[in-house]
Image (cartoon, rainbow, N blue to C red):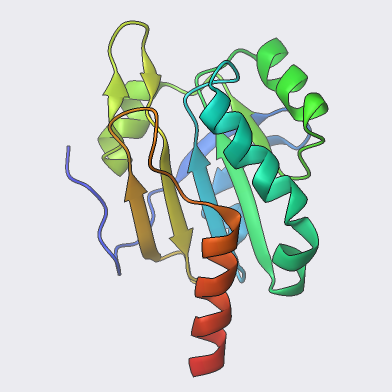
Length: 158
């Protein structure tokens, strides 16, 4: 499974979300800098910190026109509970097929139980990858402050 490199078009992924119905990325992010977060599951404390960090950074992300989506293999009930617990203000996808997502994005998979390892992408407004962060285990992931600083830098050079 090849990893996505900077400049690659992000593959089309459609998935159900807790509050926004079925969405498709990168279409949902079109015209904005986008962040796609694949998280291990609602049970993962590192994922919870990451997602709540993006929620807390909402006003800065909004100011820069950055849209965020997150997805996992969690069932709908677990994803809904997670979204409510942290007041997540972005679409939270659930029930994705780990093998299909990994095949199109290169994300690492945990085999037993089966879930996606933390993987994050920053996309340009045209849907191309400008940063990819792959983790093969519990740690190593995109954080909101880094994304904000990166997009501020890119906008200053535009």
